[in-house]
Amino acid sequence: MTSAKRHTYRSAGEQLLKAAVLAVLLCIGQQASATITSISGSDELLSIDLPEGFVVTDAEQDGSAFLLENTVVPVSAAVRLYGAGTCSAADAAISDVLGRFKARGETESFSWRGQDCAISSFSASIGGLVSGYALAAERPQGKGFVVLLTWTPAQYARDCTNFMLSFLDSLNIDWGSFYAPGPVTEYVYPSGGDAVPVTLSIDGKTIRSELRENDAEAAEGLIEREYKVLCYYQQSKLWQEAWQRYYRMIFRDSFHRLQRASFDIYNALAPYCTDDTDLAQKLLTWTQGFSYERQQTASDFASLPSMLLGGGSDCDSRSLLLGVLLRSMNMDTVMFVSAEFSHALAGFVSTHPGHSFTVGDQEFLMGETTASGVTWGMIAQDMDDQSKWISVEFP
Image 1 (cartoon, rainbow, N blue to C red):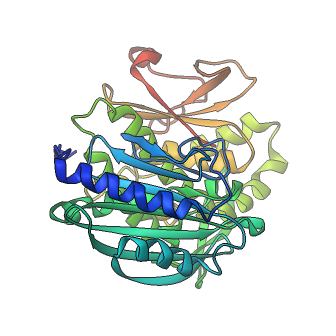
Image 2 (cartoon, rainbow, N blue to C red):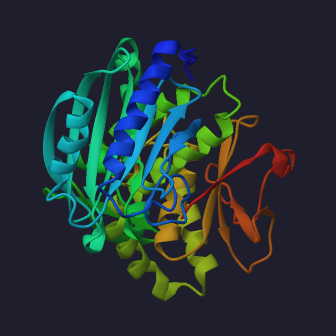
Image 3 (tube, rainbow, N blue to C red):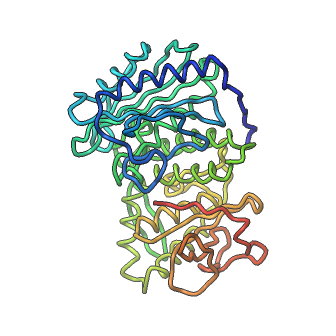
């Protein structure tokens, strides 16, 4: 992991910027009626899986606008809800916000989750020159629009672009959002396109499925962006939480891409399995047979679509692949990563005996993906200390 830069940016000029931005948000707030219930919790439908270190510095009393500042990276953000009937379209919502900032930028419209969305890059002079991005998304069932803005002092714009885009990409507007690429990824890599055939050999059965033609490229693009975000936290006390978010973002992006493959695998194997653990064992054995390969990328993480296409992999990508497939098959899964052991394990809930780690009120059998012949519930004795493992929970 490359070294991360830590910036000090709480200057008097940026305090002026904060005050000016809040004034704009309060003005907008007079027009809106909806409220946001959460900006970070993964258990709310309208939410943001925030990059670590954001704190709410101001908010409207009715909860319809928030101003945030990051304590690790010199990035600020705002969240604004427009009530039903307030704006005619997503691009109109962005134009309204940017107009109040006297910001300059271009806006493009697109569709995400079947809803009208728009994205813009902008620059503004408010307490100093800033650069940033804005995203607007229509809320389901005609509930209005949510607008996210994020910006940084102009001198940090190049370094902070991935961080700002990650913030926008972590928006959820409905339950399905937790299992689908985010809006920025959808804008850059639109879903659809031609199908790419996939042939898998699992437990002696040939399983035919498919991916979309840009799935591997899109997944790899997200992984590299999120790895750059993760690097900011190398020297931060929030490094564990940032690591967990890194894998959650990959899980979210990959789940929908692998949904057809998950369906086809389940239909081919489940009729011949005694229970979920039997099915999970067939998949664990399958991943143990993958070729080991370091990735020639900064993240050194193999995208899950590329693995289905025959690419090499390592322990963390294999463990996450199992997490996605088993979760898609309605099993509770988790992933364990360890900085001390430089290793990753899969985990899933089973009634079968075996070694398990406790997460919340559930016991997860451990799955070792890099040693052939190892079954669920077996772990190397020198790694049998849960305090040295970080659990990555999935929706």
